[in-house]
Length: 430
Image (cartoon, rainbow, N blue to C red; front, side, top):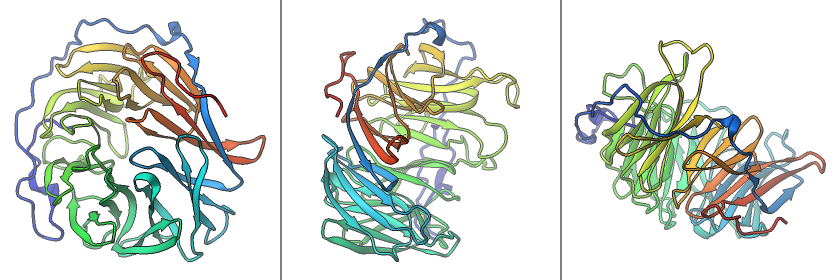
C-alpha cells in the first residue's frame, strides 16, 4: 500500500518528541500504463457456477451473547468473550477457550464485575492465557486502560496504559504483546510489552490514532494498519522499517490506509480511501521498503489482499472517470501479478478476506447474504458456506464465524476448513 517514499520521520516517533531518523526509504514510483493489459479474464458472475457447499466441521452454541472471537496464533484454539445479559451495566463477562479441532471447551474464566468494557482481545499460542484491554464506557483523551491476562486459574492486571486499547495481538512465540491505543494523552499509540507486563518499547505512529496491530508470521515485525496510516515496525526495538500516512491533508507522499502483508513481509497489498466523503481511492502492490511495484486507480471503494508469497495481489474497486461517486459503480476484482499483469477479472463477489496458504484459493465474504465464498485464482467460485463475522488462519486453512441460531435462541460459532487443491475439505459436520 505504498509507492513513492518521501514520508520519513513524521510517521514513526520514539514517544513524545524524539524522532526515528528517516524511517522510510525513498525511491521512485514505476510508471503504470493507463491502458489495461490484454490478458484473459474470468467469466462473468452470471455465468459462474454456484459452488459446492463447504461442510461445517463443528458448531459450538452458548446461551450467552458472543461478543468477540479470536484465534490463537497457532490456530489450535479459540478465545471467546461472552456476555450475559447483554443489557447489563456493567456486563457479566466470561472468557471461554474452545479447541479449534473439534469445538470442545478447554477452560473458562468469569471476569470480575468491575472489569469495565472490553475493548480488544487476543490469545497466546495454545491459549495458555488470553489478553484483553478494558476501559471505561466513555472513551476520551486521558483515560487509562487496564490490560488483563486471563487463564484457567483466574484474572490479573498485566499493565495500566495511557489511552484506550483498541487492538491487541500476541506474537506467534507467545513472548510479546502488541497494543494499539486511542486517546493517548502523549500520542504514543503503539506499545510492545513482555508477557509479564514490562514495556519493551513505545511509539507514536503517524499523527493520528486507532492503529490496528498484528504480528508478522515469524513474529519479527509489528504491522500497523487501518484508518490513519500504515507501517511496519521491528518487534525487537520498535524501529520503523517504513510507514505512510493515511491523511489526505498530508504532504508526505503517497497515502495508504490499509496493508495486507505476505508471510515473509517482503510484499504488501495496499489501498487508500478517504475516511469521509466520496470513496475514491487507489490500490497497489508494495515492496519490502514500502515503494510501489505498481499502483491502480482511481477506484471507487478500493480494497486489496496479497498472496502469501507476494506473487500476486487481488484488488477491488470500480473505475472512476471523475472524483464523484459513479452513477452505477461497477466494482470488480482483479488478480494482478508482481509485474503488473492482469491474470483474471470478474464482478466483485463480496469483501476480500485472504489468499490461501497454497495460493490456489481466494476467500471473500458476501456481507449481504452472510456467506463465505471461496474462489480459485481464475476467480471462479468453488465453494460457499453460510457464515457471518469471519475470523481466520491462513496457515491452518481454518475459518470460523459467529452468529445466532434463531430457532434455538443460542449464539453459535461455526468452523470450516478450506478445500485443498479443489478437493472436498476434510471433516464431517457435527
